[in-house]
Length: 163
Image 1 (cartoon, rainbow, N blue to C red):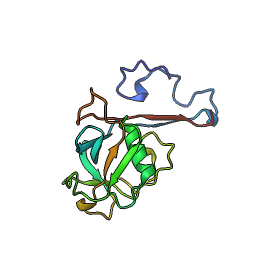
Image 2: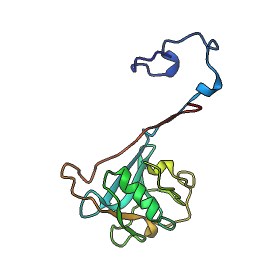
Image 3: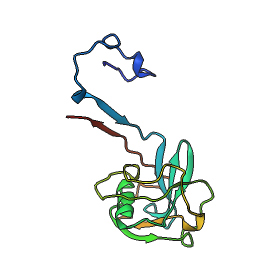
Image 4: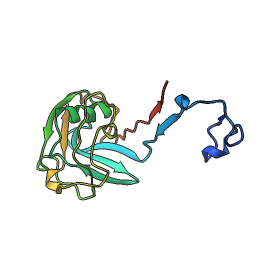
């Protein structure tokens, strides 16, 4: 494959004819795109505090707090470039309830993940929560002057199998 970056589709990239290659399966490539996934913290006192909202396929929604723990919250803070977690809000009183879809539930991070979507969770949109269980976090490092409450983070994940 010799893509220039201007191609709209992978099959438009210059390459050997379909089916002709000198590769083995240990060189297979896996790509996970996160263009449709973003995160923000809203209704907090600064950009590193608030109700956790994620954008999935163009629509903002919330994260359920019923099983959210310190490890999960630390991944959220790390993804937002806000240091480590200071506290978790398990009900919506402090940061108010969301009204859009509840996108994530049953989150189980292991601490090595750099984005929330790398953690185990139920499929997007599957949940047994109400908005009064919307998750909120407060991260320790809130002194990032150029950040706004609308700061959006996304991180692509690319792996090459067998390499």
